[in-house]
Length: 229
Image 1: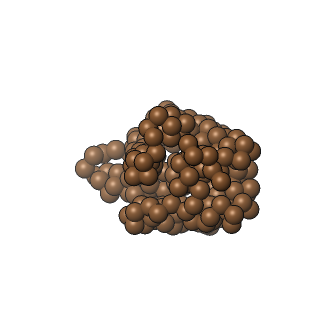
Image 2: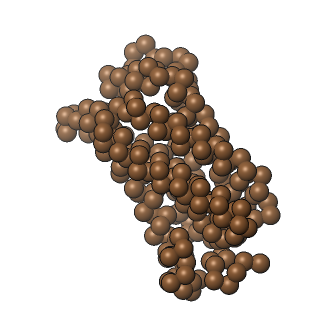
């Protein structure tokens, strides 16, 4: 039984609003599709791609091994994540055990990928900030798991998942930039980093707002839950 001071409602799959659950699945589908496309593009390059998209594909192909070392564990993380999000404590232990090492690999290779950031220092700064936040959240989740504090373990694990799925939210943002490139005259080198900041910020902020709203609804004392999160 969770201590009375902890937000025990997070021990169980969250009764999140429908729009949030839909958003989670949309992000998951986009993330999976992005990885599949990247793998296929690396394996079978398009000889006549659109100019900007072709330049982007070439940039990733220049460090194909590192790209695969990053995106394949990320794909596995995204596929396993729903088993953590939507299953009860006694049925998600196996998924958690897989998620931690996958998350570490994804986080460390993300730092390495930033060496080749096509968006320059704007993209690199977004990677440093959100990747560090992701790894920190994952570490906190693991530490609370070792302390058998299931509520705070889940709180931080959900936070890490929400942050990682921010990469999926960057894709529609990039789509807007690509679609308006003729008007803005921005190249992907110029807007790639901006899209990273926007996409990851959207996911992080939405999750934090939902988490705090959930705490208020469950009458969790402000001096306890937010301060420990």
